[in-house]
Length: 192
Ligand SMILES: [Zn+2]
Image (cartoon, rainbow, N blue to C red; front, side, top):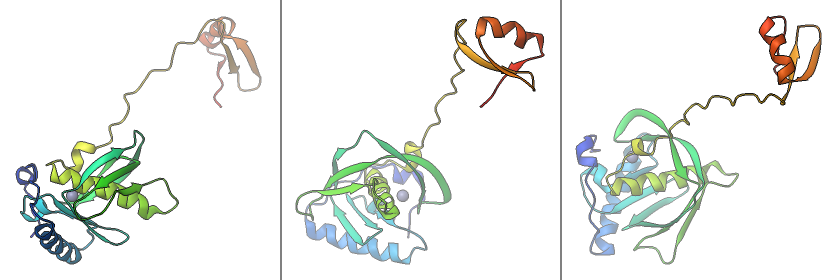
């Protein structure tokens, strides 16, 4: 059963004591994921187990036990995400373009990067961040891409050259000369 109560998903998960315990939870998660219609990742707290185990299944099934992101790029990419705990909802998120993860059941480091030709790399990179967020009680809504506030165009300088047109003729003039013509209504700023 996949948990859809937001309050429960907000709880922090605890580390598992042994890899064996983590593997058992991982197997349960993969089973649940296979039974889901379109899931590509699942975290233990989504099935009511508040332990730091998650799975990602984009290219191959990957179980992550006590995972932590040890490195992340400044650069972000935009991704359209859904979540098994919020059926039918999709939002645009900003995710790190690359992350490095350490987990108790993997020797060394795991690298994920969205900067390749293969769209599956982007899926996997976003998914691993989505699932590790779950273990920290964070949902995709906190990663929503926020639109930049609208910035009014800067005022035109008096000596700045502009293109104006009256529909037949186009000329390039300094703004101080063009301004009265534009204000007369016969000329307008040319758009390119
Ligand atoms: Zn999710």
